Image (cartoon, rainbow, N blue to C red; front, side, top):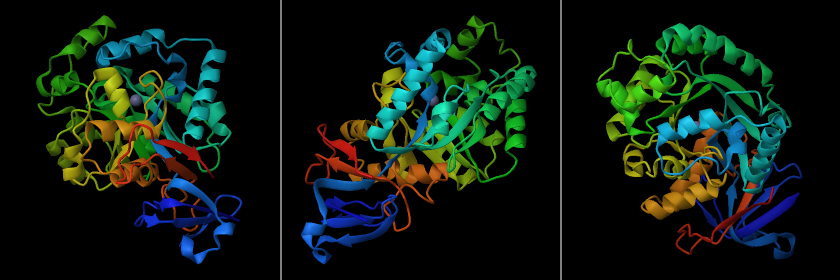
Length: 393
Ligand SMILES: [Zn+2]
């Protein structure tokens, strides 16, 4: 049995406790949450700072870890994707080493679960070791070519079969983004996923040309596809922002995790909430700054009671894989988001989005959420630049 105490304990599922105590067994299962006065101080492991649950990173591409620092910042999504597509090849050893290191970085930073996009089987080996709970999203796209749906589906079904999740982890086939998935491919994904209650992730409204494609049938995606000799001649604009195309073709009985949402408006959020009660929104602020040098307006999400989660995206589009650094970025640029709200995004909301809240996301009796020591929090709980984390359990 271990008894940890700190200036503050943030269970997330309940009110913070000053001088709280978290008692675990040797496997990390929480046995009790108490107050310091109930204990002999000599029996406690007392730390300065705050005890919080392990972080849940809801969006990453571990398999792109070897491209750290290779793609320019601030160019916008389309040049970014072009760089990734043309530069992602590397030796299997280099790819495997980078994946291993990236996972180690996340574990050291207090991350206990990951929603991870896979286009390839490269991450399967590391994930099978079960050091984190993984939700592997095998991501499909056919560049809006109805005729390409069949081949895309069978190619990625083969990748899906090569991922063998460790106990507690899982996998699903998911669409990449509205601007890359035809109606036929959405249908095949839905048919395959058939049972409801899974999590489906989809990139959403990350760049202005994405909405322009759907609203007006024009914009930079036409040139982008043209360069790869892909025709959008048959594409029918819907006259609405891109998320509406996704809502029309996704299954509302699943949990849906919209990722990025940099340009998502209050109207878009309300439409998604009306479509399904199981909607989550993953924000990856550092990746948004890296790629497009812009951030979502978090007021839209606060005003609509949206359930936000936090992702790091990959090392191709970020300087590190740290949920704490993502929280700091939001606290720096949109300081109206309270610390406790950020913490919920980083823990419980993420666990719920991935369906991992049976064991993770909050300091509650019976869970094994990991216990993270957060140091350097200001007295009013402001998340200052110097704040750091260490995993205790
Ligand atoms: Zn992504």
